[in-house]
Image 1 (cartoon, rainbow, N blue to C red):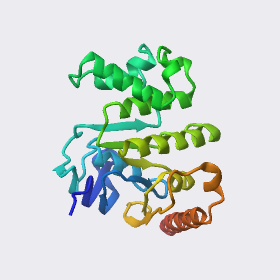
Image 2 (image 1 turned 45 degrees about the vertical axis):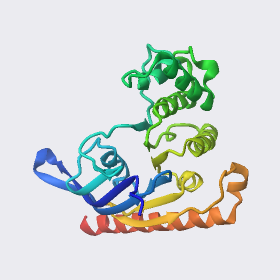
Image 3 (image 1 turned 90 degrees about the horizontal axis):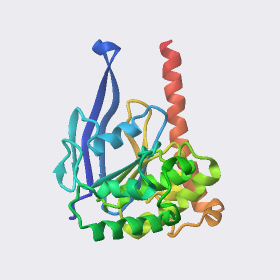
Length: 268
């Protein structure tokens, strides 16, 4: 049996609060296997630990119990050859678009020709070739996120971690970047973990949607999205199968939010 790209075995996380005088359980007993080359979205009620789970898989946050492994190796820090895209692209304002993307290759020991070829390929793939010499501040928010995506992919990571990368964008830009991301990841075959609050976005992008319960987050369901690819926005909006998936996921999330609100009311 092929080893999953990421294995999460009975993982829990608790944060100290009130200056360490008390604790807050964020995630409990998460069991999840993510196959190589799949696109997985993490969804759930606000505060359920989606971003914490992503950061633990990426080695940015330590877990308390259980084990996470990436490519068969236990995650004890940030693994080699992974990529990140966050809500804020974090571009260096004094470097051009080209040099921001090239930054990801500077420590890889590649030849100048190989680096140039790689940067140019991903600039073209993300529609940035004409903007290679621009400083980031001259670009729109959507264009800046494209730069962040190109920088994350140029090193050809085994796993791409994305934490609400389109959350601050307007609806039209967001929809366009969703289509572009689906196309790019389809071409590269990169295993992708994507956190979102947007159920429509999750269904559109994913091969599987992981639904977490209200805090402390537990694995509520893993839903396979067996919609054909490539997915076109106009067709997707009216696809009955997509509508059923959206409704199912929303029902799961809303039921958890109601339970959470009831628990808060009862304890007040």
